[in-house]
Length: 182
Image (cartoon, rainbow, N blue to C red; front, side, top):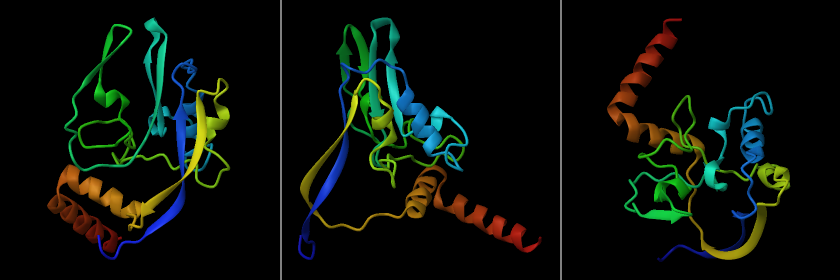
């Protein structure tokens, strides 16, 4: 594409070793506490940017952390069989999309995304993982420079997809009218 430049940047990812995960959920707890408002004021795993997919009878635990929001419904509906139990492909998907409730803020329905505990040396889920099932991996990649969506834009886009633009406009007009009458 003309006009887009490529630049090298450090990409951070969380490497997951499912053979080491014991399902303790410390990663979920610290993530939800870090993202509470104010920080560390509460613990609600529904607000966590990492989830443990559990099959305790077979001693299988798979950490999955929240990825990008995608507006499209997923076309992949593959099934995976692990130790005789069948799992839907969605179970292991990192995306926050319209067809599933995982990785959405429980009160507002806005999509959640792992921010690698922005401002910290490394993600807290990595620091708190006592069995080293989660490790931080950094690598240099050449990527096309592109404009990032701001959090507000992403949230509004998600709400527009869920409720429709007209409903949003009507609600904003009503809120504005209520605010002026106070």
